[in-house]
Amino acid sequence: MTESGAAPAAGPKRAVSWYVLGVLLLVYSVNFMDRQLFAVLQERIRLDIGLADWQLGLLGGTMFAAFYAVLGLPFAWYADRANRVRLIAAACAVWSGFTALTGLAQSFLHLALARIGVAAGEAGGVAPSYSVISDFFGQHRRGFAIGVFSLGAPLGLMAGTLLGATIADATSWRWAFAVLGLPGLALAALLVLTVREPARGRLDEAAAPVPGAEAGLVAALRHLAATPSLRFFAAAAACTSFAGYGLYQWIPTFLQRSQAMALEDVGVALAPVFLFGMAGSVAGGWLADRLAPKLRGAYGFVPGIAQLAAAPLFFAALWVPGAGATIALLVLPTALSYVWLGPTLAAAQNLSRPEIRASVAALIAFFNNLIGFGLGPLVIGALSSWLTPALGAGEALRMALIWGTAFYVLGAVLFLAAGRADRRDRDGPRGADPRRLVRTGQP
Image (cartoon, rainbow, N blue to C red; front, side, top):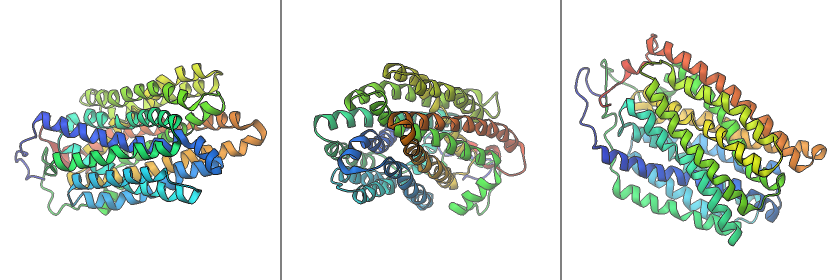
């Protein structure tokens, strides 16, 4: 951080900023593509290896999320002190390699070890990326930039669903993992060779001197504990992810079981749905950035309203009979369900000093993944298994998914609370105000 009143370092050229964002977007897309592969292929994996729904939920959610969330913390601690670009590249290479190795699995244990490897790699890629983006885009462009970066989630889900189903239908589920593990290795090399590590906090200047400012996980945890809006954002993200990961993990299986769709048809049908998710991701960050100067708390209010609208639409999509109606009704709530990404992650960066941004992002990701990703797929899978004797496999999964939509409502309430708390944090004595901690040096 610079001295109070000093001009920030000259910002990067706009073309360079967008190139870096584009490469990181591709890396993040591969992250979610490799993650989604298991979800779209799990029915074939179940039949081939002989697994129960609760085991699929464990592999697709809890086991993966536990390692992903816990390992993300030391990686973020390292990222706040070391070269973030090289860390992201190494992480991408690791998770891509283990994705390819998943195709060799012959048992539940083999799958578990491969999934742990993918989780360990992906744990080192996301939080450092937010920190890097914050050093290429100033505060008033961060929401939009992180919204663009967050396109990687629906883009990766779309690619994993479409390409995974297509390759598996032409060959086998094993070849799908082997082939789609390769792009990440090439992207890791591209990142190392073409992207330089930016100066930390170069687009920010301190509003007041912060002598001996702490960095790392302990400082980030103290900051999170002292900032009510960040606590609400973290809880809201966890609830929304519980619903989102649970639904997107099981909807491909639901369409195959309940709607009798072939695997290749599932991939083609869901691809345009995830395209609308991309639109929601960008729109959320853009809208929050536009409203924030006039509406304090916009970074919480925008996703809160979106999640509140998404819940009944998801309910309707899962309730109606017929695959065509289900797919059509999934489009709008999918777009709304991704609105939270840009505003939430931008708020976390804007409310934190440059020295702790990666660690704050990792802490939010820790709760988000441990609760959302860790429990969402598992709870829905376990509920489906519990209801199957009474309802049959197809209807049991439908009811479990409908139950999961309630967490969008809870997430909406928490996002609205985050917006209200954000207003107080920016004026209160806790030091969370980005105008006191960090003042943007570039629009």
